[in-house]
Image (cartoon, rainbow, N blue to C red):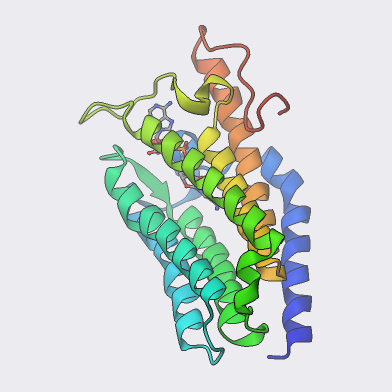
Length: 252
Ligand code: NDP
């Protein structure tokens, strides 16, 4: 595939995220607390998470490793960050969730697989084959350094917040409580905020179109989800802290 065609496809992918954003604001994706059986066949929640997330490291890793580009220091760092994130998201996180007996619509699993196929492929193929290899001097470029700092900050917030959420339930429990600690002081969904920051940082440190596409899609998926969670918390808990925002501290 030529770089020109590839870029056009990624731009179309980004435009799609922007076009679907208002729809995502209106239609809450039916998984987790918002699961609805009206969305068709349901499968085990943990299995669903593994299936939908594992395709990302497989495709990204495969296209990166098998691609013809020479692999330089900065490229190995992009690879390591992506793979570590997805080792957690596709294996460790699902195993740690306390969702025994819960189910997730196959339609959600299918659409997430499509999302991860496109993002894993475009990012792995670009780095592995299509883009210019990053020179070693990229390691001292301000974009790399600032992006890495943003990525690590987002990853820390995401992991810390997921940790707080996963510890809320005692073994066997599947209900919901008001989360406290960390950035839950300011936000209903710091885990989703952290994920958005993380991939925005990745886009800055890679400074390429497919990484930007992934960052835009992450924000387009997670801002509506955080707003739905926020509304849901306020409806469920009369004593919900009124000062909390949904997903951006002090703003949204
Ligand atoms: P949620 O915050 O909805 O849930 C995370 C886990 O914590 C689930 O196991 C959930 O259980 C449990 N949980 C959440 N809130 C409570 C509570 N108040 N009391 C008890 N348990 C709770 O996150 P998501 O499931 O939407 O996402 C999980 C991770 O995946 C996040 O880190 C997110 O950033 C990432 N993600 C990334 C996407 C992307 O586009 N890059 C897209 C979607 C997710 P239950 O399932 O029963 O609700």
